[in-house]
Image (cartoon, rainbow, N blue to C red; front, side):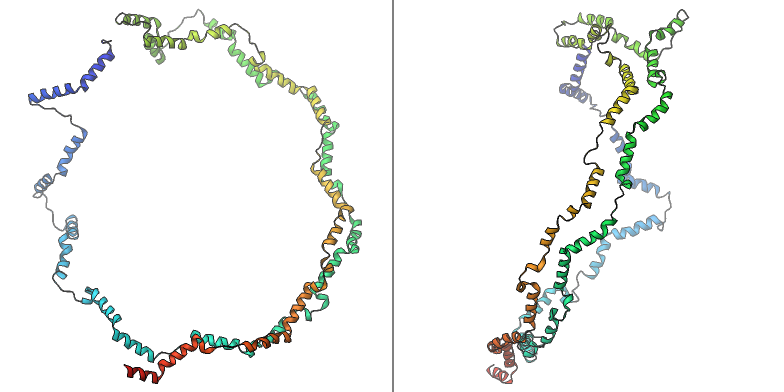
Length: 506
């Protein structure tokens, strides 16, 4: 085992990864003064190349060397732009105006510079008692209530509600507006019109008049209906004479050649491919003639190179030579596994059942083994005139239209529509349902109730009755209303006597 290539590779890998070996090499290099040399990486090479660009010292030295050789004026675009941008980016220039105008100087407007003083002055004015009394005295002597003051509006509205003139102002307009049906012609009255309509609905004479007038004009042309045309087409379709007409004309021309079919041609081509005679014919023609060597193809070269690996003898000899060096027996796991898998991959074991049960025996099911025979039998059945005529005769004599066939349903519906019994079936129900107001008590009739209500609305006696009953109880205490009290307080404030007394007291 120790002499295998894999074992040697593992030992080399362990030696390379060993910490002891790594430190031993480091100590040897350290004693020799060489040190460990690190391989130069791509990043290290890139850093060396960028060092002159990134180093400020090297940049300045290169610039000083180029300065005597190149004559650059201060008015070129790059230098002018650099000078202008330097002023914008300079912190000193940014603070120069602030240091010149602001630092060390007092503010020009103290009120704006110190807004808390302005706020304190406003608060002092708002809390000053002298200013508060001065404004109050000024408002007290010049106060006038507007005409739309709520108490004035409420007093006007109350006086209008208590006015008998306002109360009776719309009397005539109401009487003219709600006279209702009193001025209507009786024949145009809705109830009269409704009664006439109900009488027409239940009239037996009017009910039958339209029918008696139009029944002689009723004509149903069944021969031009779609159902009649479809039935006519169906009878033509079921006719044996029409059915056999085309067949009788073409039966003499019918000639089916199996040899002209695509299936027969395909079977012949397949037979030529699997025929032993065809297969050996080319060999028999070339037998005995000079044979030429075949050019070596890539597949042949690969086959030669793989031959030692595929050869069982070469593999066995090599295995026996290796077996003499190692103490291996057939119980080793890898050998036992190889013996077990050999049976699964062996072509001999794979084809044992095929050679035993298939080779040299005829097929047990000829139909499934030769499907072209089954196809040919089905084609014969389909092309058979006797079988075709037998099936057609069976369908022709057993065909029944369903009861819900559209023409049957349409004929039933037409018969129902033309039936006088069906037409008069709901007559009694309609008469009972639309008798309207004929069974209603006259005093509960909507028109009577509406007339009573209209009479009460235009009645002068009922109109004055409520007023005569309630007018003795109407009392409006104006002296305790908020408006009256507000007016009294205003008069006290505006009075010269009250002002004099207040001044003497102060």
